[in-house]
Length: 357
Image (tube, rainbow, N blue to C red):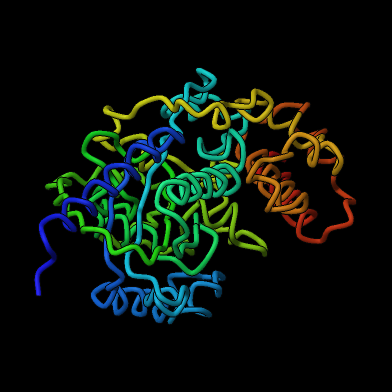
């Protein structure tokens, strides 16, 4: 039985209201999809089975919840997928690929230069849901942003927020890829949006630029080779085969996004929380390596960088120092950690010194 015309008009009006509310809370776009991930599930399983997830066991541990939203949130009918731009103007030496000409400075991925997006977006998603409740009354919902077993890019693609690029990130035709995603799982029976279509064509710039060749084929990433994975997710020693290739990247890597032609359409964020913190952008490696643990916690307060902890921070910076031009200052900096308590840090310091001496 089809929905009565008036009821259909009412549900479409509600969707428009939700979209307007989302814009009021800083989201740049909002689309709706269903819960069917049956097409995506086999691809994810194959990716995990081939070991491409590396140490990220959490992806497979709650696989069923990840591929079946109803197992994560009982009663969910629709998923509201939203995006929020984080693109910002940063230190000139770090803009684009300029950091390659500043090997004595630490490069940090753009997404991590402001406040932790998990906190910012989760709070705003909650505000959107509560604002909707103030209009229609109580309804079932839960909000997520990279914080639960949720296939964010797949859901956003199904909702029509963009398409999965060959680097596996979501690309939007009008906004590029410099944005975060968030979801509202809801029991509201909202109308579905349509797919946007793919627009990568024959372009392979993201594949060609990857320093470690982590994009092993279009739309397929081996996380174990990815600098973002190695500097953020990986808990052990960085494999020697990748250390030189990391250059001065100490937290994440943006190369594949920097060269993407669609990012010429990216808009600067209107969210103050994502503005660059100067101390994290283009700072000298020797300065970053001199931070005490209390300095690290002070300068990364409210930042996603804090999640890797001080030991991995020193590990990453030691690698970058090994790739920097040889100077007495850099040698002294590395030698200052020769006897550091962490065996992993000492190992990377020794490697870095061998690159200079």
